[in-house]
Image (cartoon, rainbow, N blue to C red; front, side, top):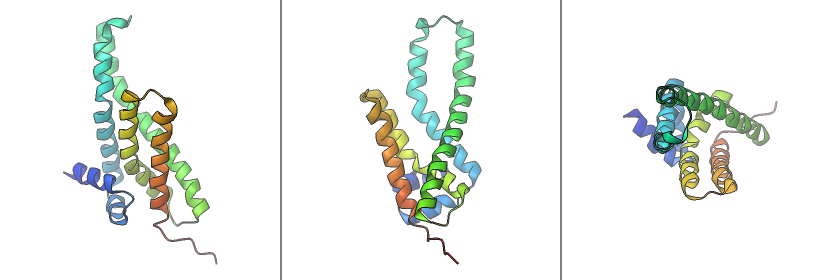
Length: 159
């Protein structure tokens, strides 16, 4: 149930009320949320990989092992690493805008803000085969959401 509330609030970002509700979610639930989103979004790729098994030179058992064990762990590892890098860029943006935010808050905000850009990326990947649109537009959407969320927070005071 919390997953669906998180999903709903992620779609409502950058609204202030959704932002503050999502910031109350634990880091564990945030990682579970992003894992479920990635699992759902990469199901078409897994199905395509199963259909195209005949074009591989490895044994079927090894292929299934890679698909069921290694692929999900790789996706989760890359997601955590990618979110960390994107949150680092948001941290720089926070510094430029002089707002009071910790990296942990930005990490969570980035994870939830990625919902719409990830969906756009998967849709573009399967419909439009132009890398600038497939990768650039979701990043633009992400950072427009991040900018609007960051300016919600108060500015730092200079003593």
